Amino acid sequence: MTSVAVGPVKSLPESFYTPFLSDIAKARLPSPIRSLLPLEATPGLLSLLAGKPNPTTFPFTSFSFTAQAPPPEDGQTVREDISLKLSGAELAAALQYGPTGGMAPLVDWLYDLQRTMHGRERGEGWTLSVGGGSQDLLSKAIIALLNPGDTVLVQSPVYAGVIPLFHSLKCEQIEVEADADGISSESLRAILEGWPADRAKPKVLYTIPYGGNPTGATATFARRREVLQLAREHNFLIMEGTPLQAILAIDYSLSHYKTDDPYFYLFYGHESERAPSYFTMERADASLAGSPIAVGRVLRFDSISKILSAGMRIGFASGPAPILRAIDAHTATANLQPASLTQAIAHALLSAWGTDGFLAHTRGVSGFYRKKRDVFEAAMQRHLQGLAEWTPPQSGLFFWFKLLIPGAEDDSALVVRTQAFERGVLALPGTVFLPNGRKTAYVRAAFSLLGEEEVDEALRRLKETILDARAAAGA
Image (tube, rainbow, N blue to C red; front, side, top):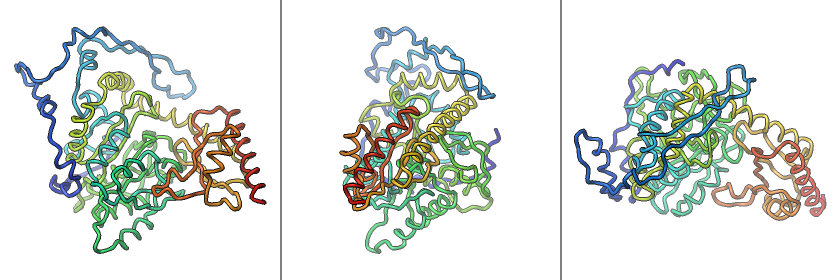
């Protein structure tokens, strides 16, 4: 692999982030114990600091597990199992309290992953922290950046899990339209340029550029470029959400935004439609000869949930050091740290695979879900043609489609929550993905779990539900 061709870059000064941090983040006191834990590594030091349990009282002596080897290059051979084991000092660290922002071996591996995938090197003003899934880190970032009642820019429709986080802070969620090409930079520009002069502009945009949940849409390169430019013009930060946790091998060549293997998980579109992350793009802009641009406007969230295991609850955030410190300070007082044992298991597997093996695995995952997407699309064509409208997702695990029921064009909730459920089909009405909860004719259906026959039956039942609703509406 070749690295991104870069020149020297500058990062925004730490003082730049002071107005962006919430009152809670600024007032949060450091943990009196956890803030001193790094000093325990001082050679010759005898620590009486923390009430760590004595490891001799732990009953576990080793953990052994098997995992699949990376897929072979031919893509046809059955993947063999490899045996892995945690013991000795590695197990002792996994069973003990660990660093707030993640165990060093795993953190180092993830730093290298971000360098490989996004062209981001250490020493550029950003840092990385591990959390209990990306949702854990996302919720802490929101608390670190927003005060109660603040306005926030939100791609709409949006990942339903983020809406309650903003709602709990009584934030005013300003919906930025999105369509099959991702977030609308035109909509975002209109909002910002028409913003009342007597009101502070939003300081955060939350967007999912790849595989937007629920739509599966991926933002085009042109839109991303304009969104990043708007962030500089109107002084806001971009929270780059990746609930489908981007990591799938592709190549692209878009002007100076060129890296060798930027990988974005579960991408099903054409190569010409693939675009770099915001995390990559701001670095590429800043590396241009004579560029006045400084990096530091992007806070990115990743996870291993859709790649290795959802139950391990491991996510990681990458972004400006002051914001990551605020997230870590929250962790230190809330849940102390992400689980050491699952981090050690993940690192044992990732280090055994290596970066190339990991990326080979993600390509296999993408191929698996691409086939399931195609099976679902074929069933949609068989059963819902003329009864619904949809655009095949470019990424992700969902179909987002509009029900065509006269008289109920703006509300799918009754059909989905009651009538479809009574026929034995469970899906989500689109209203739960709209920040302001308005009615919509759209529905989200997941295609990740059901087999081909089950998909066919589910959509047959949905077809009958829609036909009944249309008949009741006099269609």
